[in-house]
Image 1 (cartoon, rainbow, N blue to C red):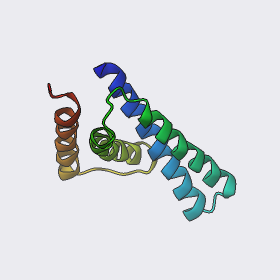
Image 2: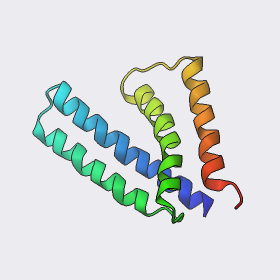
Image 3: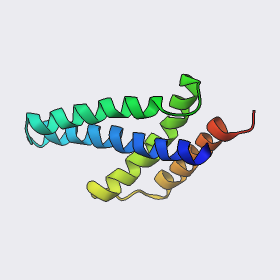
Image 4: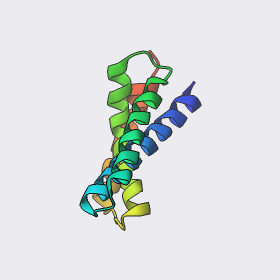
Length: 108
């Protein structure tokens, strides 16, 4: 269950962050309405993927996903936008992942 959940978090992050990035470059870099539309579709896909989480509590899944989103956004910025995180960015990201683990995978 944990491996599936982690894979779904990664897929959700790719869809949401990728979609938001397409909307961003479509509007800010004047890439056109097709790029924006693709971004909107990816954002919709994010919602579908998030709903596939095995955990039944919406609030828990979305709260934990917030940490995944933060880490994914930093990784996306490194890969596609020349972002260079400093030690505080990395420390914050690590703290977020600990939060994800506690929220989603602590024994209940």
